[in-house]
Image 1 (cartoon, protein in one colour):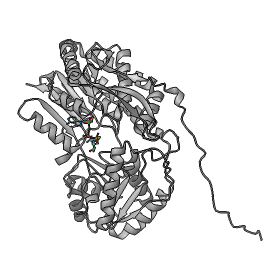
Image 2 (tube, rainbow, N blue to C red):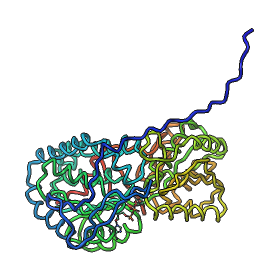
Image 3 (cartoon, rainbow, N blue to C red):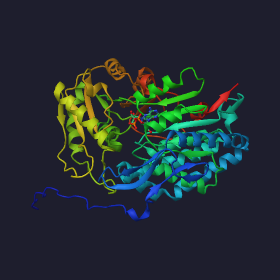
Length: 485
Ligand code: NAD
């Protein structure tokens, strides 16, 4: 009889697989992009943008002052009539050109996105940059088909649009904003977030390379002051993605002005797992839902709702899966969880996590060694969470999951909707009828079934309640950029 030798416990790890920085050569300093040229700020300043994984300075970036913002808006205003009058097919060709140039420079863009923002290269390479190109491709195709998109109604471009974006998906958010605006015949002034200006500036280079007429796209880097100046300037429509607090401020500023506004704001989305779900698949979806981009995702599945009968089992499998997450160098191709975007965001996460412990929730963090320099937070799961706890109510915007339980589908709906937000939700079940029933009752703009955090340029995205209004993406994403008679 053959003897069976016990198998030694598997001990293995990945060797480091760092992406080379050589494919992205950063300049020492970057100017504002106004009227087709890079220009120094006239009444602004210069600020170093840093790598949040190491705290090393990357480049000095212009911060626009109010005069710079006004100059960018004036350039967009001057360019507007000609751009609007251009044959739609020709406008589409410019967008196709931008899309192709993004593809051509995708490696460089991915590296810079990870350096400036801290997200794993695997995500910037496989998600952010390809999706940004896909948005331009998709809207390039719509440019000469707008009449079909709006059901034959008479329409015209809005004119000049002011667009303010956050730091979690810097290039992708810029693409979400610019592609539909340009396809509809508007000119634009884009204000990237202060901690992640670099890929928007590379996009400005691409716009130049694509030979867009001067003034059609302007990029004014800067902080909230530049954003506020843009919102209050002579623009016809504002598109804002960012926090609910700033969104409310913008809504107040624009009230009664007759200017268009769309707001894509925060979220506290429920990821709901029923007892009949494929549990291992659900655990992957939970991980994707909360640890993708360090949880810096407006639609992150940050509240996990587990049916009581499987709650313990799912938590056990989740903890085991979390032990396999690799936290560290964003440029390492094996990294799952990168750096927190800024010191300020790290402080916010730390404060909210402390509140969870004080209020009585139980914390779990897998053993992981965090780098000494830079901004880092270990993947975190809270169990024993009451709905009233701050960690169940407030957007943490970090790798922190709050677990709640439910017994019936109605209770799941009630708990999922018990939030001021309404951006997205996930439903995990083998029953198609239950997916549809839940989708009808959940107050969320996007509902994923047996998956999470999937994005496509043809699919509209947006929120209810304090998550904002208006839709970006797909045919729906064109309407906010058009005026109807
Ligand atoms: P934030 O509101 O602080 O900043 C967003 C942008 O607004 C930045 O460019 C910032 O400089 C600018 N800004 C700041 N103050 C301003 C003002 N008074 N007027 C005009 N502009 C101003 O948000 P953040 O911390 O950079 O981003 C995180 C937030 O964005 C989260 O709440 C997240 O949920 C949300 N977000 C939403 C979506 C969505 O599609 N719903 C997508 C990504 C991020």
